Image 1 (cartoon, rainbow, N blue to C red):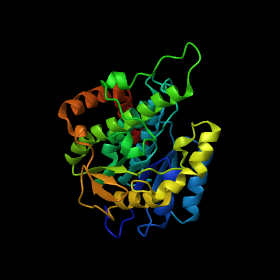
Image 2: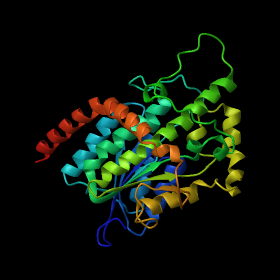
Image 3: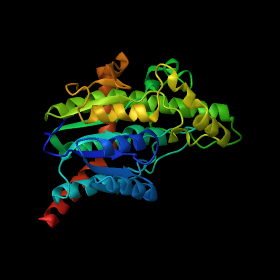
Image 4: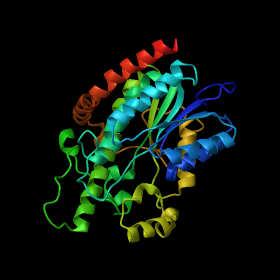
Length: 334
């Protein structure tokens, strides 16, 4: 465990209302450590239902609304968690499961700050979360971020998702312009798939830098690859007929190597986060419970340096203000 048997760990979880995140919540509710939970989600009604579920199981749970497509919302959510810690309502965070992510059927949408939406949710918002959470972690705190086999190329995703396309950070964060005429769905979906795979390649790349930063203060960070988990809400942006196939037929692929079910994948993620498995691993890549290796290209120092420099600049307006607000709330609490 990340804490002693006497102390109940504080666990931070994004996206607990559906898919793998809902599975993580179920495993946390049944975990013998009886953790205190901090749950973050966009849908207020679904978040309330998750909190009710946790409290009905006898756990202490706090909910925070957040929209990862808006860095201002992430900033506000971090400030709210900081205020809970400063007030002594919750203890510093022992384990953070940054599960929430997104995939879309095009590359034309943008987040609130104007960056391409997939890159915003899967990379920029995650960078802000890791940066903002670092001072809120317990001395041996552990962060788990969600990788994807799509960072390896389309063969690793059963050819369901195109190969990633590495570009400069600014280019990866730029959406395609609005269409000026009719578009082919297959071409749009291809671009959406490339954006998703590229965002995961970027996340796995910058995760090495996150791990190095956290290690300086004795904390751990690992990347968890859930495998192909068909039937989750990740496909909700698909047209109705495709989503029906994704939800009702594709889960049969769980018997294949590299694929699994939400229940199995979420169990491995919780075991990793709480130190029941791979307790000594840092900056590792854990794939459906197995310690493997990310693609070697993710370790390229030049890529890492360029990406983290761009991300630090992108989140800068939302970190200094968040720190000031947290300090203000600390004074009010005192």
